[in-house]
Amino acid sequence: MDDAVKVLIVDDQAPFRMAARMVVQLTDGFDVVGEAETGETSVDLAAQLGPDLILMDVNLPGIDGLEATRRILAAAAEPPVVVVLSTYEADEYAPRATDAGAASFIPKAEFDPDRLAEAWATATATSRAS
Image 1: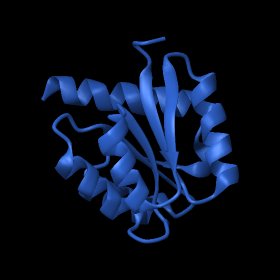
Image 2 (image 1 turned 90 degrees about the horizontal axis):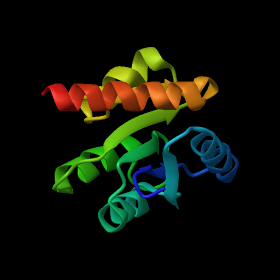
Image 3 (image 1 turned 60 degrees about the horizontal axis):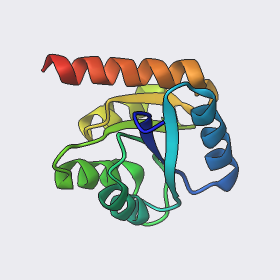
Image 4 (image 1 turned 45 degrees about the vertical axis):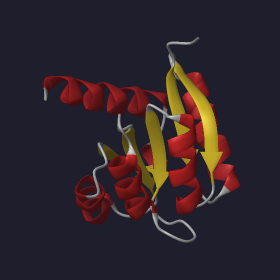
């Protein structure tokens, strides 16, 4: 499965990381390569692992997910696709996620294999077109 989309999961809550890992494993063509609990760790792991896709929580200890997204995208020679996941309201956080450079925002309650595949397809179609 070498051509699988490499996914880094970033969330400070272990139960949600476990749930996100299950969603990724149930989505054809995606593979979890790492997990981080803090924004700082996510920046380090993104540089080390070179994921294709990062599932980023907003509320993290230390730097938040939006700042971590900015740092990851600024530092990467080939920036990953970042999808922000949160329990916060989409109306408020979707524009903030986009401003930080994220490809999309998905409420955690709506995160499933279909939404993951759809977010990836949309982000990669957009990046290929630009």
